[in-house]
Length: 280
Image (cartoon, rainbow, N blue to C red):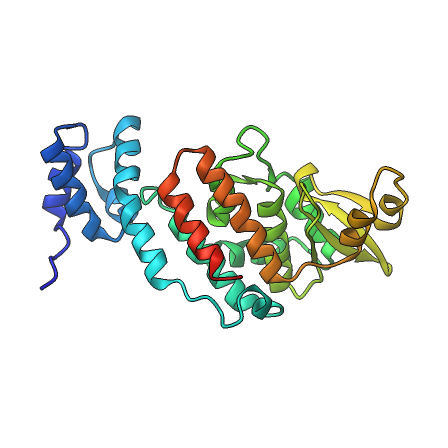
């Protein structure tokens, strides 16, 4: 028989014990919070007692095991792995949403990823966005989204819902938001899996334009970049290609494993490795 999750009164009592480091108490609190599914954001939004920074840190850590378990339980890799995602943007976004929910701290209230993307698309349409270049300017030139230079290696950059809410991410996160909003508006924005710095491609008057979302959406003529004598043959080949969703997802997992390892979150990094392996 399954244990029932804690009722609001018990949750309030458990939160008052967050600063108690006694092993027995910590084990009790951890065990009961594990039944909450890893997310207390809605409860905390109406909870009269605020949490100190140290309590928030402890609570986030205690909620992680449940989110790891939920992600591993619900993860469904497509038959055939990453190549099977070649044109399946719907499944691709669903996987990004699962990763976003996993990376959420379980404390802050925010929109689910798909809702946040829908709202961005709606706002851009109301602002008169008609082309991919209009969307580029709307998102990046007006600083709705910017490069997270101060926390470039933060795992949250791979949480696209967090990135939209905070208005910052790494190159891959910014490009993903650009592409997913563009698809809602039926605009063409392609992924460019360039080594070390993810990029996008749009077309203006038939000419391919490379977009550096991390650099305020800066535009580069693809033909001009290809003439750079310092660019090797392999890099030129990649610059000409468009990356499919499966390739992009593997790149996201590579980034995330490195970011989680760097943050000392080894259990989370191990889970990302296991999920990445299901795509190969």
